[in-house]
Length: 225
Image: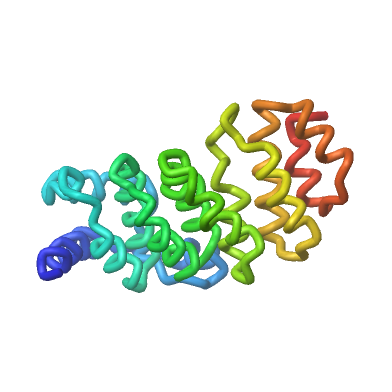
């Protein structure tokens, strides 16, 4: 753990050198005031991350959940973004045993910016390599009381294209079709829109034959009409 916090302290120093309060306020406003920001915009943050990964060599080591958790517990949102970058660069190292940790990340400091990165990337990758987790865990997310887990279930196949499990996608959607939650309606539309790039006839038939929220229909039909 000492090594983890040494690395986090290094990243913090690198970030603090570029703290920008003028940028921070509009970034916080864009996120509805849910999170504080250092004010480091994405292009610069990615440059800092690249330097950090090179200096520490962390990408050449086993997947480090303590590092991610340490970043997740820090106040400013840029730290969570770096955790997401680290996970995206470590997808090949993920195992089914990491799925409970992904669930913790989805349900902690939850907002669309983190959930939408975790669901189709780490979760999606784990489900491809260990498909048994879909029935064991992700099916339950679709009807979970936590809205962000339901959104993650709807979105975990977002990058699957022709490998999309259509019946499961449509089942998850119908399990959530009557939800009044904006983020659920939006997720349904996004998932349908992405799948329509692969199977437009199926998505059109599904949308025409189901009772979906207008937002979901509008988003899902973008490439169909």
